[in-house]
Length: 519
Image (cartoon, rainbow, N blue to C red; front, side, top):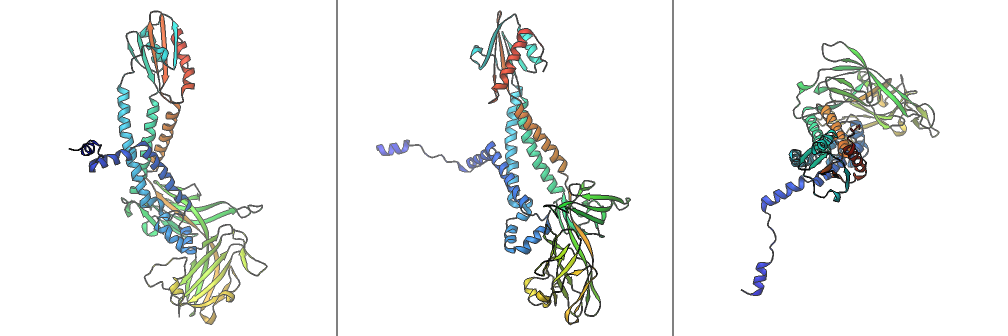
């Protein structure tokens, strides 16, 4: 064998993990504390888009507005699940990894802590003068008396020939474990809410009602373990809606408050009761909460076709285009009109004023001078019977709009209609009349059985942080050599020396004089 071959044989070979080795490495990496912290940071970071981007389950009208104003951006948002952040696959992946990592952190730490509790305090070192905190005094203190006084200070005590060992501060680690267990409890509570809870959105116009059934929701998102029979059988009617605004100053038009006045039936046979629904003051019935999310206007429109028949008569919820003035856009579809279907694109101005260039705008969000603009009127097949779903805020898809016959557009549009006024369409195609103004409200109805466990877990997490920050681990030893008493101590928490210095001086005083601790 040559020297080169011998060197090659003696050279260290790279370690071969194998499948089992890689699995162990992956598990140790996942359950490391730094990994849990990174995942916790990612969990918080992933929640940010849910606050910045409108969510389908909370603000469906704003989602519809994004689709209307910027369809390309809305499509990308939808691909990335930014309209449903908390139901997205990537959010669920972070959630599950964090859940697994916390379990992997808690189990070994709990085992280590239990062993630490069962272990007796260590014996006293021979030379206590080398410890960071030490003192000596003369006296006839006995081992039994020293142990008794330290137990009075809530130390765990162990004794031996001529020495006493004491320690306390285990609640610090209890706080750490409580915090991690509480985080795990929050994740479990979120999971319970996702499985056994449900939420949905609905738009209700003044005078209309709502019954808590699946068919009544505009958007319904049940958990996997929820059935139609799981819904609480309550109902209510919106009798009135009122909103107040700032009338003067720089913040003129700013929304101050709004309320929905309901008549509620908690169950089919229950007596009717009145309830004022306000923002952040939900209606709660058997664990189901109804939140007031937003509001807008719904002008009442009557459409008469070319044969003199009423083809449409009712309120039309409008999509808000300008929040400061509540200028809104509405669409009216009359598929039953004869001899051809009629469609209208309308603009609603709560407080209509005419500008110097002759255009009309809304100067205030309150309905002081409500008027209805006819932006466009069309006849032809609107495609509502084609089987293809359409938005209530869109007259027709672009390919259908090209085939419609424009009756009124642009310069042919009349002045805005006041309440009670009407406009006759060209060529005897029909008539549109603005008859009244109503308001609508959007609601989020949610049943979350994990809400209370999440609250309890959050409170426990705060308590755990307080314990881990306020309590210090410290040890104390006493050696008795005839008439000389040596006392030494140290802290096991970094940065807690300043606080322990004062405590150590007090302990020395108690051991020397036998004073009781009054703290």
